[in-house]
Image (tube, rainbow, N blue to C red; front, top):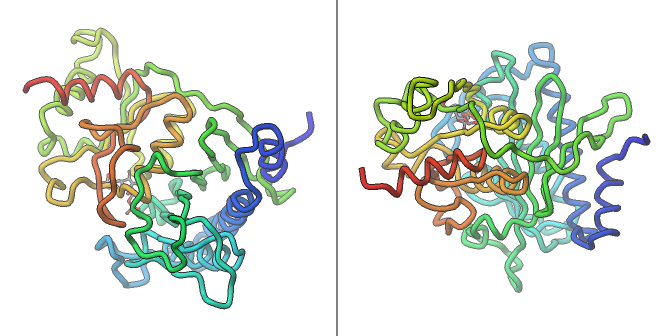
Length: 335
Ligand code: AFP
C-alpha cells in the first residue's frame, strides 16, 4: 500500500469531510516541520552541544534546558511568518508572542509546550512537543492573554510529537486521533495509525508514587485498590509505569490503554495542580477523548474547564474510560 504523508492525509480529509480549511492545514504542516527540526536537534544529543541548562528560570519557575529554549525558538520562527496565526503562546514565555507587523495575520491562536518532560533529556528518555490550536475571537487583531482563555472544547486541533526511538506525530482535528511516524529517509511524516482507540478497561496505572503522602482520599483509595491486586476489591493485578514525561505516558496509554494521574494534592493545592491546563491538559484531553478515552480533574471534565490564566495549573486524570470514571466516582462519593 502507498504511504500516506501528513499533507496527503490532511488534503484527503478536507475533501472527504470538509473539516480542515487550507489555513489550518498549513498551520499543522508548519508545526510538523518544526517538530522535525526539534527531533533532529534532540537526536544529536551531546554531539550537538544541546544538553544541559542555560542558567535561566522560566515563567513556571523551572530551570530552562538548552533544548527548551531551542525548541521554543524553532517553533516561533517556523510559525510567525506563514500568515495563518494571530498570536502564539508558549509554556516557556510569560506573555503571548505577537506576530511581527511585517507579516500577515491569520485567524488562529497557537499554544504549545515546546519540550515537555525536558528534565528527561539529559538521561536520553523520550520527550515531546505538545500543541493546541484555537480560533482567535472575531474582530481581535492584537490578541491579549485573555483571548487565549477558551475552554478545551473550543480547540480546533491538538497534537503532540514524541521524540523517542522513533519520532511520532499524534494529531486530532476533532474527528478521531491519528498517528504519523517520521520517515527520516523521505523526510516526511507517514500515516501509521488511523482511528486510534484506547481500550476502555486497563490493568495499568501511572502516577508519581513519591507524592502518595500528599494525595487526597479518592486518589489514595483508587491506588490502594490497584495495589491490592487479585486479593482486593478489584480482583485483578495491576501494573505501574511512570516516565515523568507526559507525552511518553500518554503515548503508552494511546497504544495499549492505561490511566495517567497527576491529581491535585496537598503539595500542589495552592497552585491548582502540577500540570498546565493550556499547554498540557487541554491538548492531551482532546487527543484522549477523540481516541475514546476520558479526561477529568476528578471533579469535572477537563475540556469544560474555563481557563483563568495562560499558565494555570490543573489536576489531570486521563486514559481508559472506565478507570477515569471510577476515579471521578470516588471523588463524588462522601469520604
Ligand atoms: P518537565 O518538562 O519539567 O520535565 O516536567 C514534565 C511534566 O510536566 C510532565 O511531562 C510529567 O508528567 C510531570 O511533569 C512529571 O512530574 P514529576 O517530576 O513530579 O513526576
